[in-house]
Image (cartoon, rainbow, N blue to C red; front, side):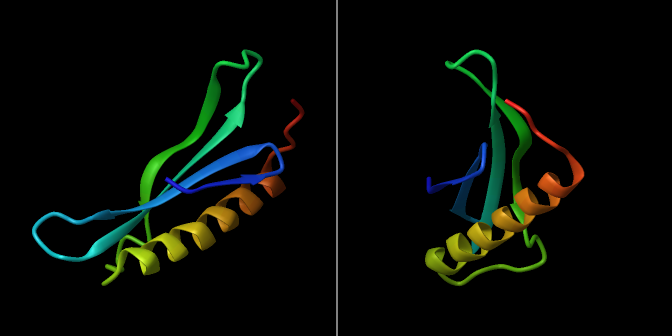
Amino acid sequence: MPIKYVDFYEVNYTAEPLRGCKLWGAYVAIYAPSRNPMHRVNLVKKRRVSADHQFTTEADAVAEAGEVAVKLVERRRRRYVFHP
């Protein structure tokens, strides 16, 4: 599972095969650090992004998930101020 770090946020993004077909879906989860170094706070549970679009290759789905993940973090940063 590819991971990006944007400021304090950990962004996991991946592609998974869709049931009943040979197409792929793009998925994203966003985490923040917690006071306990052994844990992290799940801000956005793993969810499918671009749900109306099915990708023909895994690489296309991963690329889309990475782009959407960065947009989600940027939107969240504007809305909330995070101080570790």
